[in-house]
Length: 463
Ligand SMILES: Cc1cc2nc3c(=O)[nH]c(=O)nc-3n(C[C@H](O)[C@H](O)[C@H](O)COP(=O)(O)OP(=O)(O)OC[C@H]3O[C@@H](n4cnc5c(N)ncnc54)[C@H](O)[C@@H]3O)c2cc1C
Image (cartoon, rainbow, N blue to C red):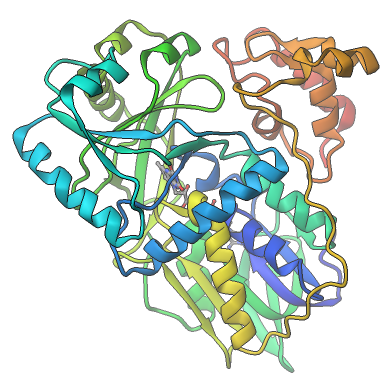
């Protein structure tokens, strides 16, 4: 993390969520001086940390939209990127389940929609096969569509990998610097922030829930963010054996509906709700929201009623009055708006970044590739399906800290905590350490390990 200083950068990216960090790592491939700025003290603390963590194929997007195109492209790019960098992904596939004759009748239309989006692998599944594949499914399902390439991904490692790559390639990360105003002096933008003035020739607005406020600073008035809250319930790992695939509902015009999915940490996720809220910081869960989820979850998988809940949370979709992404580059103003990335931005992030950087180039930003790109970062693996450090005998033999368990629920070792605290993009608080290691994220939610983890954290000190 660096001080803004008085230098003039080529590009300032406002917002270090999954979209802003993806844009930063893509711009880092060119000979440009870039700054990535966020109001928060860490990357990925907005909507990017609280979603459903599905790596979508885009089968259900509206054909012909920018979202459909960038989602398909981004999803393909993220699959290879995750593989190269060690972001946890599990290719579980999804079953979109019909529970009524009306929903069953809608399945061929959804399959046709997928084909129009260029996704050809959807396949009808009869009730017999459905119950053979998902024996814990509640009674009454009449059939399904299989979407074999839907996957689950770690939403926390993804922006962290992008930011780590960007910082390694020279992008300056300025955190705790909410942008409050803009002025232009001799072709240079001056962004007022809590950390002083940031100067840059081009600005990219990737401020998520705050993107309409930033857009108005640049003279835009084409959209307003209408936060749509989604509450979710995380079940204990003992629930994981209840399902094999992501179980999707038949979507409605308003929402993709309530789904059940495994997580890459070995839990089960139920949600999200969809409720418009006036306050872009209102991530509270509600009794009514959680009760409605539990009722839906019990209908889909009756066994869930017996399982323990580990945590609940809510995220806010950056919805607008428009149904598509709000992405445009204003060449004369040297300004890019990347907004309205409502409910697919994790999957689409690299496609969005590629598209935006292309538009910036067409608008006059000089894109000269760097002479030799650095290798991609290899991120600490925090998934459940692969080998964790405590399971790696040779790693433990070489460094005993990887065999010293700090968080017993999630099997997080001292070595992993130490590495996270010393990483190029270190955590700013215990929540950040949790997202990097899974420490305090298990069924006791830190009851046993929080004191030890806090001590380790305070020994290093806040960045
Ligand atoms: C309930 C829910 C479920 C979802 N499920 C999925 C899913 O399964 N798969 C999927 O692909 N997508 C999903 N999404 C969507 C996905 O999470 C978002 O599209 C994505 O995280 C948006 O990223 P972002 O970078 O645009 O926004 P954010 O992550 O919100 O980042 C914006 C950043 O801008 C910063 N900022 C704001 N204002 C300012 C300012 N004035 N100055 C400086 N910084 C500022 C904020 O601090 C924040 O860090 C879901 C979303 C929700 C809410």
